[in-house]
Figure 1 (cartoon, rainbow, N blue to C red):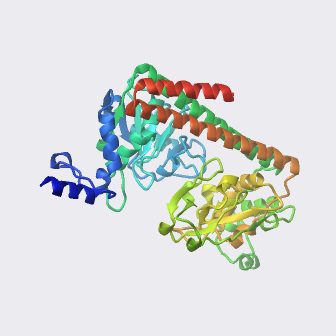
Figure 2 (cartoon, rainbow, N blue to C red):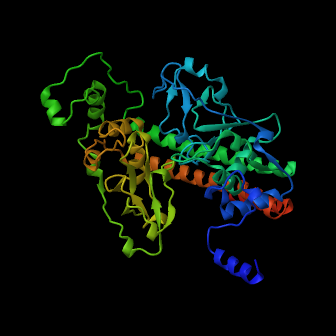
Figure 3 (cartoon, one colour):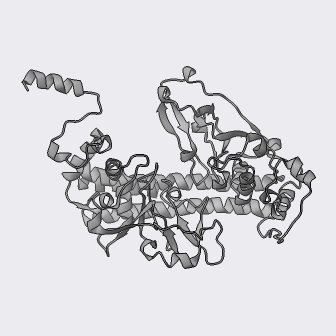
Length: 483
């Protein structure tokens, strides 16, 4: 190729997601995922750093159970053991506890290969959220998982778990995972590829400081969870539901008049437990429609700018807040239909048992949400109190009873607004709001700490370890000043 042709060829490639590589470098993978420009650039930087090893050299790698668990059940009954699935790792650093499932203790003991302990790093390896990570930062009594999770257990003192997690959750870890994913209908990460992922090794003192920052991030995140639990406890106490025991007779009878009035014939809906729960929550004669009104502010792409912030089901966080993704308006999905405002409460109509509700912050005003949400404007109740009520497991149980369809179970807006809600005293609402705000603040600080740990690793790779140490000193000074 002449110099003129080479220059012309280079110009043709400008701005395109296209690369030119030696055949020897792509002999195993030719798919687009493994040849992303950004991933290749990061891989070169990582390869040129001070020291690089692979996950297989520093950690034992396995995955969860591949067998069918016939005894799986949803409640922590006698001897129940928490059974993690891919959806329980949601990018929030900690395990998502909103919709846990359990297996019998006898099944757990058959799955020694997939037992999980404190210090393990978990990675989703199957599905749309492949690459999400979590650090097991507390010693679980018993914990196991299904085959959608990879389990990384550091070998002796080869590497600190929190450092490994910070690396994998950062740009250099995530770009490798994105390149290593493979599959047709369902993308995933096979264990040999997971074992082969590169990990940057830094000076021992620097790795230790990064790990301490990451461990601290997890401690602060636990504080956020404790504030949310306190808010739920406050509400359950004022509703006199904390020690409530539902009636569970072996048999019960309902009249055809009740069935016709409800428009359904399933036995579950007419259990004495459900009737008692409805009576308790409806003791003041109020429904959600009395304390909040649905808002239907339509999103019109033709009136929007070049981009917009989009909130979908996957953006709902465990602390009752919502993330958002910036999308080009021309790429707006058909489900992007509703504009939200600061102070709105979103609740998912799909699989409400998962407790997917969020309070929209003032800085999210004008964002767009999926049609899979009902947008509520609190009027006779504070947003924090309404959020906490909608996230109560007993309330989500009632919502779930009103879902229709099996593959995509959803509650209608009408049925949602007809759900009962007791009157909540003003002092209780203020106390709940204080706990929710404290949880938000703790979560934000936790996120900042983990991002700082990730950034320190990136600076060490892209610049120098001296620069990374200087950055960590500035973070520590800022933390001390804020305390």
